[in-house]
Image (tube, rainbow, N blue to C red):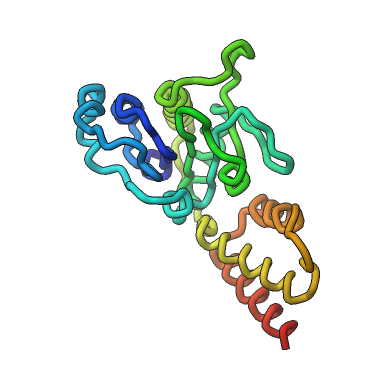
Length: 237
């Protein structure tokens, strides 16, 4: 399952956390990770913590934005204790089990915010689903590397406990980038038709959530995109 899971760190500031995350990934058999808006370049400090996992520090996908980090992923899960209307809130174990089931459709990204403020409202909104670790109310916030360790362990447990894989053909799921193009076409068609005459508010967000819950295949996403682009073009005429 490891090739189908990507851990995404947004704005990590503490180099020791980077090293600890690399070590945790090696512990539990994960090797795909991306770092968006890297907040530290003290890699010597990170390497001192990444015991026997130094090679992972040499190959994270370092990108400027979350969009780039998850563009090729079919399911994007943001980690946060906050609740967002219209989004499921899963436990780490539930994320692991569903990621295993979704593996034939495409890659799953599990997204972690920075050590100080976590994920922003906009970043939570663009994730498909959310997940939280059920910590005690007195101290609900975990250290970044500790949080990654919990999810990595659950992913490992789910993989080890799964029955032998069967040769099942499933349509590849639409990637996050493909869904984003469908959403942009939807927004354009709604504006052309006058549905969005003023501020966007929640209309597109709620419609977008419906599309993401539908788990479109790549073929279905292309059909939606073609239909919405054509509709918007005809309305403008």
